[in-house]
Amino acid sequence: MTDKGQMVVVTGGTRGVGAGIARRFLTAGARVVVCARRPPAAPVEVPGNAAEFRPLDVRDAEAATEFFGAVAADHGGIDVLVNNAGGTPFGLLAETPAARQTKIVQLNLLAPLYTSLAAYEVMRRQETGGVIVMIGSVSGTRPSPGSGAYGAAKAGLENLARTMAVEWAPEVRVNTVVLGLTRTESSHLHYGDEDGIAAVGRTVPLGRLAEPADVGDACVFLASDAARYVSGSSLHLHGGGERPAFLDAASVNH
Image 1 (cartoon, helix red, strand yellow):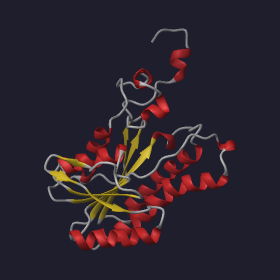
Image 2 (cartoon, helix red, strand yellow):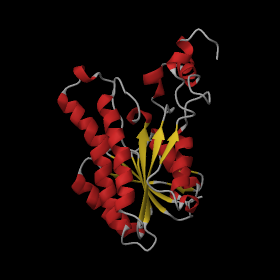
Image 3 (cartoon, rainbow, N blue to C red):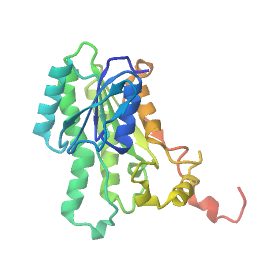
Image 4 (cartoon, rainbow, N blue to C red):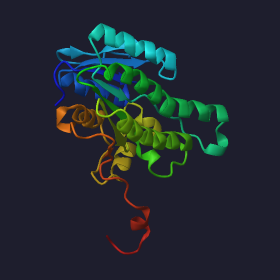
């Protein structure tokens, strides 16, 4: 488990997967700062422990540098950064303006680069170093119709994490959690009502969508001493992946 008292920053940690990640670290006894452009609708907390919110536009490199410097000064350092902020609306490539594509890449690739660089400047000076966890996506490992720029950015993010793991070793470990289908408060926008969400879940070998807590547990593991020799790795959190379409199309029963 994460050492009690570790200082953890979760970007985009005010809702959805990010809030789930923050809560698992809080449960493990960590001190957690969550950041986003706007404050959470409700406190991100668990019994006996609550996250601190600080505003940050992760796409602003200068602001990121100031943010991590301030957090380190106020809390005595930063042990873990989880780069969770990201996402994309649905849009076919030929129907999405170039300006929108640029913003998607900025949020999902350049922003994690900016925050990681800022966190590294703090972590490399610490006796205990630090850990960075990227939140990737299966969209970066396969064709991603409707979210092409997002998938390309996530593919780049995974490669970036591997390079950081080499350049920044041994002071800082860097890994990626590659997410599959995950249930959040906005799942209905993608999958419909509860019946639709359940139907999508049945396409996953383990029979359900991931929960934010599942993602949080993976991040807590990667940040812990149990993963002390894990760096430059990608942990696929997709419930077994996607059932190949040819199995359902074939006439032979499987």
